[in-house]
Length: 245
Image (tube, rainbow, N blue to C red; front, side):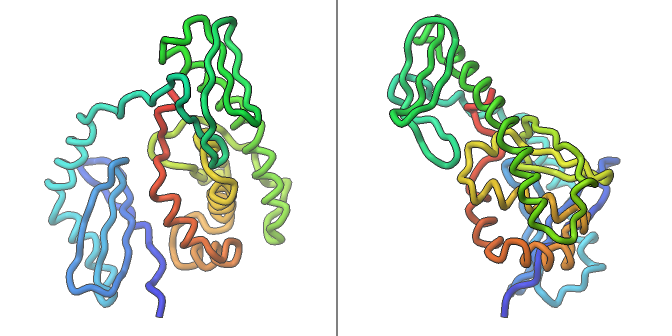
């Protein structure tokens, strides 16, 4: 027997509207954790009534606030290595980096990334050049792919889909607003195509089910039958990557 689908629980903490991901599991006690990106997750016994969940969060409000404050004071991870021979990702593959001096230019071929900047020994210049290339690729690849996947969903009216925003997000791969506007993390282009498709389909499903309740996950299971496997792989990835400055 499979475990119930996760539930998104909205609550207020010190005047801030927050959400907590609740997972019902075969366990005797509950467990609460704050992830590195500030996400809140509560694991509860399957038989624990839903009306008791908010009380658990209130009981541990001081601990939650402390964890969030600690995260806010944690410095960002160091800049990735951008030296000659380092490997940079694109669409799930790692490519060796070749550096030359000259006017800024980035190209990807069978032999890897070729990056030309005025000072190849300066990591920040190399990072900035790559960042611009990744951004242009995200804008070129993600909106068209979203449209292609939308065409595969018979219950979705294509004319109702608004052009997605493609921006840098620190803690999410994507989101869907109540007005139907989808926002995508430009860092998606670092991931393998099947993970990109999972995120896009996940957001498209929100056009029909705006929450993360049982009906949403039932719909997602029809659209992406192996979504739990893809979700598990995606959790090992970071929505923010130091390549994207």
